Amino acid sequence: MAEFWKSAGLHLVNVNENGWLDVTPDYLRAYYTRPEVHPMDESCDEEHRLFEDLMEDPFCKIDAARLDKIVNKDAADNYRLVLNYRAHLMLAGTIEGAYLAIIRSSRVDFPPVFLDQMVHLIIGNLLSNCKDPIQLRAGEIFFRKQVVTTDDGRVMLADEEVVKMHAQTGGAGSLGQLLVESGTPMKKIELDVLNEDNKEIYWQRSDRFDTVVDFRFTQPALDAFARVVESWIKHFLGVKARIAPRQSFNHEPQGWWHIGLDRESTLILNRIFETEQTSFEEMNQLIALLGVEIEDQDAVLPEMRGVPIYLGVAMSADKQLKLKPQNILMNLPLSAVD
Image (tube, rainbow, N blue to C red):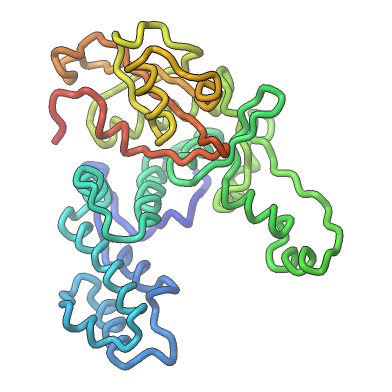
């Protein structure tokens, strides 16, 4: 099986008998060695001692008084944030358990990017046996912001960070930045659109996140996204769901349940449900609609059994997509979730 997403950190954790990811010393050490946390040569002795203690025993107790002794207050604050994150992980014992506890409490007392990194790791485990690069690319949408292009009737998704980098440097890194600053003309660099014919190129560049997919109805990427959502639901909630792309709503708004997978689709679907109408501009922002069927209806709230469930995906007014995969875990109408 080809490797992908080495940056996810799957090699730092253990998959337990339930298929969830145990928090390990090496996983925590990866956060202690982040550039904003790792001490510099000129850092104070207390900061160096703290770092050494954490590297030796990543789970060791650190009290607030010890952080107060660090001379560089910004460094002390960075340690507080990482240790806040560690507290969630240690309490739960698993990455998934910590993720669920965090989203249920809405208490994010650490950098939000850490949540994206948790999702990256979890999705990497879910798709560890995946043989379809288009499904892996669809998985990226769960943890990386996308830029949406709708020219020629298509719905193209590209990684926001990669697009920004290409806009600034032409894709040539620091050399490109120098050329831009000097006014030197640069050759335009196109990002590859992943399809059934060329998808094998993904394996060698998966950590570059530099491929584009067409997210339109009937296109492989949208169907692949549906498969990832199915795996996400089964992994966390233990229920099997069948998810299929839809072109339109097949039921009256008052007769269905809806979940927006991002901020914009939540607002749009809420408005349709409450008023049965929305603007043309908002409907154009809705780039994907999916229907959900829960196989075991006994797992569904009694009053919601047989009620159609729709998932929405929408871009913002400035054509960006930031998925909130926690929404589906929090809002499916299930009887009870451990």
